[in-house]
Structures are given as C-alpha cells and as structure tokens.
Image (cartoon, rainbow over all chains, first blue to last red; front, side, top):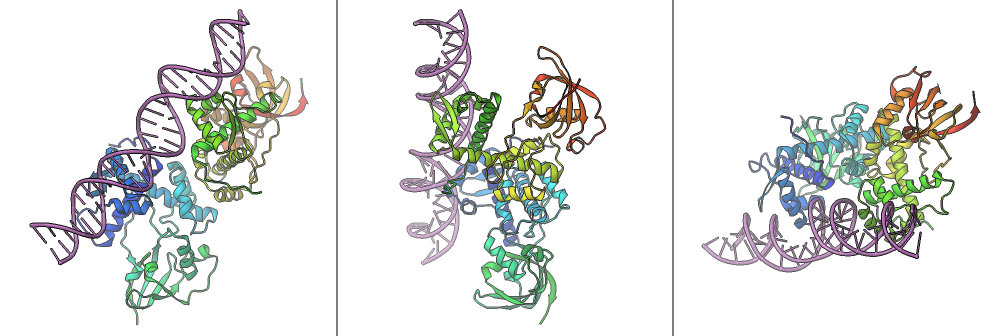
Amino acid sequence: MMEKSGPPLTAPVEDYLKTIFEIEVADAAGSGRREHPPAAGTNEIAQALGIAPASVTGMLRRLAEQGLISYERYRGVRLSDAGRRAALRTIRRHRVIEAYLTSALGYPWDRVHQEAERLEHAASDELIDRMAAAIGEPTTDPHGAPIPTRDGTLDARPLLALVDVDVGHVVRIRMVGDRDPERLRYLAELGVTPGADVRVVARAPFGGPITLRIVREGSEGSRVTGRSGRSDRESAIGPSLAAQVFVESRRKREA
Amino acid sequence: MMEKSGPPLTAPVEDYLKTIFEIEVADAAGSGRREHPPAAGTNEIAQALGIAPASVTGMLRRLAEQGLISYERYRGVRLSDAGRRAALRTIRRHRVIEAYLTSALGYPWDRVHQEAERLEHAASDELIDRMAAAIGEPTTDPHGAPIPTRDGTLDARPLLALVDVDVGHVVRIRMVGDRDPERLRYLAELGVTPGADVRVVARAPFGGPITLRIVREGSEGSRVTGRSGRSDRESAIGPSLAAQVFVESRRKREA
DNA sequence: AGAAAATATTAGGCAAGACTAAATCTTGCC
DNA sequence: GGCAAGATTTAGTCTTGCCTAATATTTTCT
C-alpha cells in the first residue's frame, strides 16, 4: 500500500479539489442524500472559483488524467480517493493556519481566511503539524469548521442551518461561513460565534428576519471581538445570513 | 510621492529581483567597488536560479518593461529603485519567516531556508510584521543575515570571509551561508554559529584546511544544535566552507 | 589584430491556466 | 414528443515561464 504522493499539486489544482470537495459535502448535507453519489457541476465549480465555466472544463480533463477525479463529459465530476485525500490535506492546511493565526498571532477572525487561502499552498506538512502542536491540536478553525486529521479523517457531524431552526428552540452555534469579512465582523458584534447558545425568539414569515437572543457567550467571543457583555440583547438577522450560521440542536424547547 | 505599488509581483519575479539584489551586493562587497555600478550578468542569474540562461533573457525584458530593472542587451542588469525596494521586501519576508520558524516553532536552522523560500511569496506584510513582533523584532535571521526594516533599510555592515582571516586572529562569527542544510548541520556541530568567537589556529597553504578553535559559544549555538560543551575542541574546515562563513574582526592578534 | 572562448540573445516550442465566442448536450415543460 | 433554456464543451487566443538549438556579441588571449 502507501501510494506514492506523485508530483506536487499546483495551487490552482489544490483549489479545484478543495472546491469540488466542498460542493460534494454541501450537496450531500443539503438533502439527506440527493442522488446516490453527489456530483459537482462545471458551473458550480466555476462560480465558486470565480472563473469562467469554459476554463473549468479544461482543468477537469487534466484532473481526470491525473486520476484525481472521475469525469464524464456533460455529467459532472466526483473526487477519486486520491483527489479526496488531496482535498482534505489542503483543507487541513487551511484550517490549521486559520487557527494558528488567531491563536498565536492575534489575527482577527475576519481576516484569517484570506491569508490562509495563500499560505495553504506554500506551507509544508511539517509546518502545519508544528503549528497545530503549538496551539494544542485544535479540532476546529476559528469559524468552527472541523480540522481534518493528519490521516485525512474529517468530523462530519451533521449541523443545522440557523435559518431552519424553529422558534423557541435554543441552539448552540457551531460554525459560521468564513468567506465574507464584513459578515464575520457583524456576527462577532452580535455575539454569534462558535460555542454561543442562542434562542430563536421570533421568525418573520416570507423570508423575513429571525430574532434571536444570546443565552450564553461563545468561548471565542471575547477574544474575537474584543468586546463582551452584550449577551442579553436581542438581534434580528436576515435569512441569507442565517443560512450561513450552523448550529447543533440542544433539543430543548421553550415557550 | 508614494508611488503606486502596482500589480502584485509573481513568485518568479520576486525570485529574480531577490537574486539580482544578492548578486549586486556580493559584487559590491567582493571588491571594494568593482565598476562604478555593479551589474548582474545573465549567466550569474541563471545559475543562481537553476534555470537556463536563455530563459533569463526573456524575463529580464519583462522586468525592464515593468521598470524593475534597467537593462541593456549584452550589458547586464541593475535594479531600479522600485526593483530594489521589491527585492528588499521579499528578503525581509524571507528572513523574518526564518527567524520566526526557529524562534516560535522550533525549526532547526538547516531547514528554515527551504520553507521560507516558499512562504515568502505567500505571506502578507501584515503577517510578517506580526511574526516579527511576536519574536521581539529580530535584527538578523538564524544564519546571521540582517533583516531589512519595514521601510527597506538594510544594515550592510562589511564582513570578512573566514577564509581570509589571518592565523592568530580571533574573530566573531556573524553570518553563515544558509543554502545548504548539510553544511549548516555540520557547522552547528562544530559550534560555528553566529555570535561565537573563534581563533584561527592554523592555515594550510595552497587552499588547504583552516584550523580553528571555538573561544566562546554562539548564543544560538545550544538552541540550534541541542548540544553544547564542545567549545574547546579544534576543528579543521576546508576553504570552500570557510568562504561561506562571515566574521567581524575583533582586532585582536595573538601568538 | 584576429581567432577562440565566454556570454547573451533569438527562434521556435511546450505546458498550465484563463478568456470569449460559438457549438452542443440535457432537461424540463407544455 | 419536441423545443427552448440552461449547462457544458469546443475552438481559437493570450500570458507567463521555462526549454533547446542556433546565432550574435563581447572579451580575452596570443
């Protein structure tokens, strides 16, 4: 066993694999299981990477040649085992870097994503392991996303989008989307950070805002925001924002 | 003033500028001043970068178009002010990263160069500044090379190659070449690390070995090697190795 | 000075990645 | 069952960097 790791992957290739992986995960989570095996479409990939769909096709052929994906024209792609392993390696790098930057260097959580996006392609595995060790082998990044282990295991506990939580429930924030700095700053200001417990106080119909109350601060909260003590205010957030906040049910209903 | 920084430079471009800068410095140091302005040759650059000379020509044209160098066919190149600034920025990144990796993450000094070589193109200036601050704003990297300041000032104190030191002199090791890991491990084992004082005990003629005795351990020594207490042994090193070790004269002659 | 040696440059290619415009599949809808 | 909409792929270019082989220029040596 122990397949050769082959030639090192280029940064664009790593980005494609990471993106395809994330699409597969989102598809699988989005609906129990949609089709038997979820496949990523050319357009989806193009949009996620911010490039033209036509550019994606060429790269998919190359990825297929390298055995990183299985690809049938017009049918979408699926990661091979090698491709999935490579994707997880890159995601691990990304998330360890994010965690390290906040823990060890005081980076604010809204800026680590951008920095990690570049460093993930340049850091050696040894560096990543040293970083992880230096901050106590974290299991999630600052936004709550789980960090794959060295051997490629990812804790894929199913989470619920805050937008889908019923009124009255108290839930614990587990993860928030990490891509938009402004959104992250806003959430931190509200106290919606991983580890916090919130109660859904109200939900306006027809895609209206969701009103919530922070029941307990997230452990990251004060470090992330520099502020604290605003725990018992209510805030209302729109559904598109609430769709990017993932929670774990606490199975506790209240009036 | 305050010229636009323009589009970000690619990794190869940064490597060219860094290399040209280092050649200019070496030329200037190598002989008081050789010509009025030292110029880097195509071959030199190609060899330093490990690519074919013909490949260099094309890049030089592009660098000249971007105003980073001045270039006359068949005459060699010279960095423009913009080019020199960019080179110093890259060198600062490289050296801060090296210092950080050893200070904060326990990297051995023979492996930081390789890692920094990739990270220097991916790290933001903010990250570099945070790293520098985290380890107390070091002024040199682990090999003793001075770190350019944020505003592009480089301490260019003239150093002497150990190979040129006369017998009997005691000199302080200031800097060692950082490119070859094996060489670095060997030097560390000998105790030839920045900060150490050595006496040149003997020098065999016709390019023969140089015998030296460690008079005082370098401050980095024990951290770098993990060993210590071998300070009063004599060692003999060849001239090519001694050419990569730079010292500061202590102006003290002994029998 | 004039030829040999060293140094540089052109010429012609290749691969990775990306783009636009123009086909071509698939699918959903009536 | 057929057709339009949407998704995908092909065709044809471009840029960056690199390579080898052939040519040109400088330098050096006798």
